[in-house]
Structures are given as structure tokens and as C-alpha cells.
Length: 310
Length: 233
Image (cartoon, rainbow over all chains, first blue to last red; front, side, top):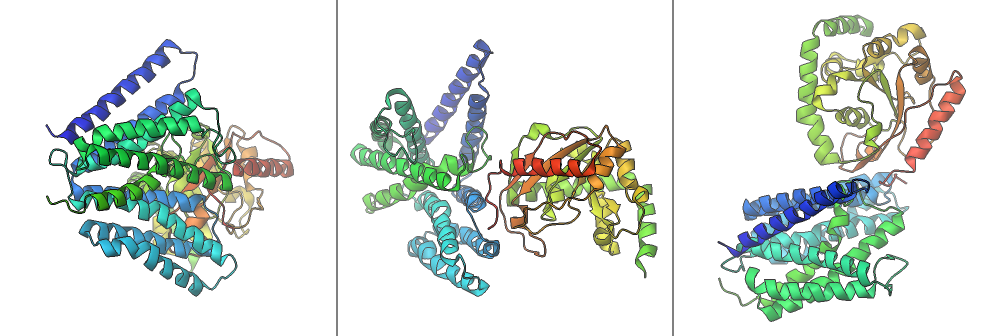
């Protein structure tokens, strides 16, 4: 059996065990409220189910799947961001960048993939804004619309580039590579949370996120780095040493993604970005760390494996 | 052709073909409305439990977009859709035979004359029948779509009149936000945005119309504060 299949089965078994524990707890302590926990577990079934379904349908399906995720994330962003009434025209053009960007990822046109949003869209959108003619709030509108495009589309589209890159481990294919990135990023979230809950004392940025502590961060980085060291040679073409660096990078930038989105929510004055994923909040609440870990991991991987020949 | 002459036969015809209406309505919601609401929009539904499951009930929502009616109706499963009927302005939704056909068969509207020529008893006849038949009506107490920036609710007395005529009716205040951003008044291009649907608790009845409308306004302001999405500046 392929390594990626073992990994997929491992995820499903782990989720089944987690669900079992949650149901058992609810059964044993009916007086306590486990609704939130159960909602969260049920949402994980949906997330893992949909991701695995897309991955097993192949590279094109996975590309389209992540393009759709980008669309949902971008939509969520524009829904919570303060915009002017006239900005809906700009937003419309921003949405159209998604299929173009993912198409460049699919056909592996690296040069265009890497500059389409930060150069072409960044030059085009202000022109469209100028044609609307409303100059009050012009800078803020352009900044909001372009930055969200970077976070929700540009960063996430790097997964699609990886999927189509064909630098795979023989035994795990592109599925292994994607599962590695997703699993390492998510387990970093979880381990930072668990370590913070258990040992957290020294706050890092109390004004942004009072739950973020040095103990949680360091515990998360160590756990994530260890996991990546073990999994990298099994799921990707990276050696264990290269996997170690990848894990360390993902852990650090995953933390940054998390707190950057916290700053955005704090600025707007909301707790969750939406209610798409019951128990988790909106899509952005779940994707925050991934928005930073994806491009950083990609560029590291792309450089390290540049001499790879299939 | 003059308008009144055209309206009558259409209304009469609709009364004869109930079965046909229901199917078109279900298909329209299944194939067009639900996918659009699910994919192009996306709803943050707050306090879904507050939504009345059985009639007679009135969903009293603020009104900023044509999407409002579709979103509120889409909250119901297809099997319950026949119970839910929007009250809509006859001067707009019956203005030519194409729109009238669509309004009657796909939306199953209760037409209402806004012009003020018809006496009140006759005006609300469609609503009375619907409430008497245990239906749930979608009603916009503002009587028209407001501009998105506007947050001053200009409520009309119709909602109070209905609640007095049918005291058993639950009147549930609902705030919709973001739909005026997705499809504002006077625009034809739908731009995807998530929207909030904040459902309040059923209102207490009140003999005094002014007090009733003031209470509804207060409800709206409370519900507005629970919205997740940003309002347009």
C-alpha cells in the first residue's frame, strides 16, 4: 500500500478515536455540555472527508477544490472587511483573479503564477478604482482588497502549484506532499494550543491574543519539528534533515498566520469570521496558519528540491 | 393593454393551478435559489431556533435587496416551502405578464397594492387568507427597499394591523445584513458576499401601533449588534 494511503487511514482512525472519546464523555457526564466539542469533531469529519475526496480524485480536482476554498476564504474576508458601497465593483474583479491564478498553477507557468497577483492585480485594481471615480477612502479600499487577495488567493494557490509540480515521493505521490503540509500545519495549531493550556504563563502578545504564550509556542515548535522530521522522508522527497527545517519553518510561520488573523478580527471587533464550520467559526479561522505556512513551505521545498529528477 | 385588465385573469388563473405552482416553486428553489444562496452568497444564521416552523407566523425583516425574500424562503426545507409566502408590491411584481407569471408560479407571492387606493380590509385580504391557512408570510414592515447605508427604520403600520387582526400569529423580527452589499437596489450585478440572518424572539402584542413599531425598532437595533459581517460605510 502507498504511504499516502496509510496516512489517510491514520487520519480517519485518529478522527474515529477522537469522536469516540467525545461521545463517551457526553454519555458519561450528561450534565456537562459537550455540544461545542461534538460540533467540532463533526466538522473535522467534513473537512478531512472533503480534502481526501478531492485528493483521491486527482490533481485537477485538487486544484479546483483549493480554488473553491480560496473563493470561500476571499468571500469571507470581503464580508467582514469595512468596504465602501462602490467597492463591490472592485471586489467583483478581485474574484476573477482566482481562476486565472489557479490556472497558472495548473499549467505550471511559474513566472506568471508568482507575479500575477502581486504585480498585475495590484496594478489593475487601483486603475479600476480610479475609473469608479470615488477618491474618498481610495487608499484604504485598495489596500483592503489587495491584501485579502494575497492572503486568501495568492498564498493558498501555492498548494495547487505543489500538487501539479510532480516532485513526489514514489510511494506517496502528490497526496503525500499535500497531506504532509496540511497535517504538520494543523498539528502545530493543536500542539501550540495544548502546550499553552497546560504550561502557559508568559504571554507573547497579550493585546492581540491573550492565549498565546511562550510555553505554548515553544512546545508547539518542538512537537511540530519532531513530527515533520519523522514524516518528511516517508511522505515527501525531503530527507529527515530537510524535514526538520520544514517543520521548524511551518511551526514559526503558522503561529504568525494565527496571530495576524487575530489582529484583523480584533480590529474589526468580531470573534469569528463567519459560521461556515460549526465549532470552528469561519473558514478563515481554520485557515489562518495555513495562509502563512503554505507559501513559506512551498518556496523552501521548491528551492531545496530544484535538482530533483523524477 | 391597461394594467388592471391584465392583473385579474392572471390572479384568477393562479387560483386554479395550485399543484402546478408548487412544483415550479420547488424546482426554482432547488435548482436556482438554494445553490445561489449556498455558493454565491453564504449565510451566517444566528439563532436558527427562533425561526417559526409552523404558521400562522410573520417573518418581519428589514429590506435592502431583492435577495432578502429568496434568502428568507431558502431557510425552509423544500418540503415546507409551500407554507412560506412573500408579501410583495403588486405595482412592481405584477407590472407585466412575464414578471407576474414568475411572481405567482416561482415565488407564490401575496400581491399587495402599495398605492393606497384600496381600502385596508381589502388590501390585506391575501395576508388574512394566508394566516388563516396556517401559512408563514415574509413581510417587510418598511414597505420598500431601503438604501444600504440607511439604518433608520421607517416602519409602516401594516405589520401592527396584521398582528391585531390575527392575535395568534407569531411575529418574528429578523435582521438581514450584507444582502444590500451583494445586490443593492438599482444594481443588476450580483457580487458574492456572506450575509447575516439574525433571528429574534417572537414579539409581544400591543394595542398601540406606535408602541408596537417602537418595540420592533428596538428589536432590530439589538439584532443588528449581533451581526458578523461589516456594513457598508
